[in-house]
Length: 79
Figure 1 (cartoon, one colour):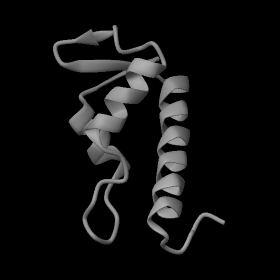
Figure 2 (figure 1 turned 60 degrees about the vertical axis):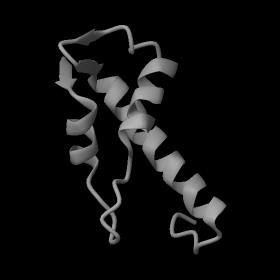
Figure 3 (figure 1 turned 90 degrees about the vertical axis):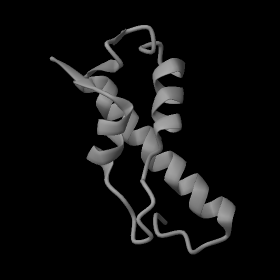
């Protein structure tokens, strides 16, 4: 099953943190799409994700957030 989402819709789906910052940015979603080889599957501004790719994206987002927290020197809530 494919899921059609614009990067903006994906940002909304992952939500925001306490400072109203998105957990994943449109840039990160586009980068993931390009690196995973699904960037070419764009139709009318929407990226086509399979369920498996959405799960990979979710893992990617968690990893990115762990890296951000570690990089900023804040308390690592993922440990």
